[in-house]
Image 1 (cartoon, rainbow over the protein chains, first blue to last red):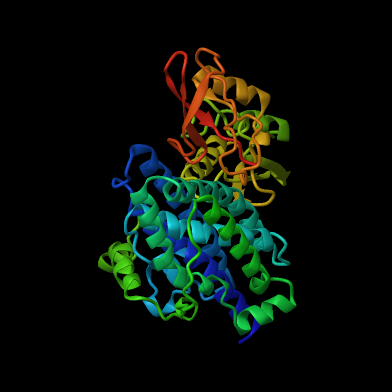
Image 2: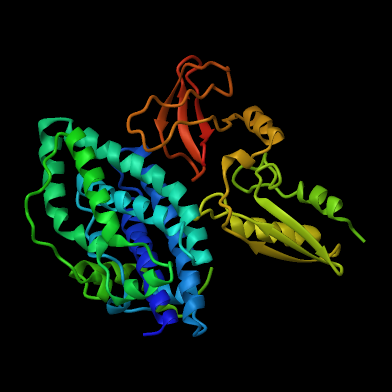
Length: 252
Length: 159
């Protein structure tokens, strides 16, 4: 693997997290529990898909094979996606979606803060732009975790279950391999090992505020970063890629 | 031949498709106008990553300058757009249009902080409440006035 291949792989991970989560969150459009949340979700989805576009455009450029951002978004197979398993998990109920978003937003804010200092100017610029949006997302998801956790008996129980169910997908956000090693040397990548304790303490802080327990389970699921996904991704892609598969090259 | 100043003035005719009362110059999304050998390069920056207005704005600029000078529109992400770039003129226009301009806000990492006081653009009362952090477009939050009861948009602070 050379530097370009590593950079392509690295940029895809960031892009695919945004793209897949953006698509998931957009599934709430028209199904939000209240109108304001419906609008909030679609706004967040729009930010995420916008970020995905910026990262995919860069990935396509680094790749240098004449593909466009759209080609990468709509014409890859599931094994070629590099998103973490967390973001492809189904929306479930509103608490499930907020728990997923909360784990991700805490990670994303720390990650983008690091990426703004990257020696890769394009990644740093997209991170600077995305960080501002992520702060809004984090505030939104944290406040919901607290409101639901410290809410009624039923909301408390439901969000605790969501937290417990999704916990096994959190460590993968900090997955690193030789791609990271190569890019860390040149100051392009963010040191994920250093972020993990910060993530844990920030998550613990909000969960304490929400009167929720940190899950005790230690089993962690991984595979997404290397292309081994849960069955949910296939269904998501079938819907997301439908138009391009049915009408190749169509535009509007 | 047109001068740089004249191009800046011309750009005042391109409005934001989602908030037509504001020009792209008021919004601070035109970052640079470069003139070289009768060709003009205009650099713009998006307000939000997923802003759907960018392509329309790009087209608007190209159409505006067609027949006047050949133009290339470039997009840049850094430095990232901030509401600090909104001109005083733009802030006044927003208020008159019924959208509250951005106020200085506390750090967003403070959970459940007292929400920013946003005066009602219609009756000027400070007795307002936030309905939702996210509004009709990516750049706006949804508020309501407790005095005149009117709902209104708040152009939220982005730093």
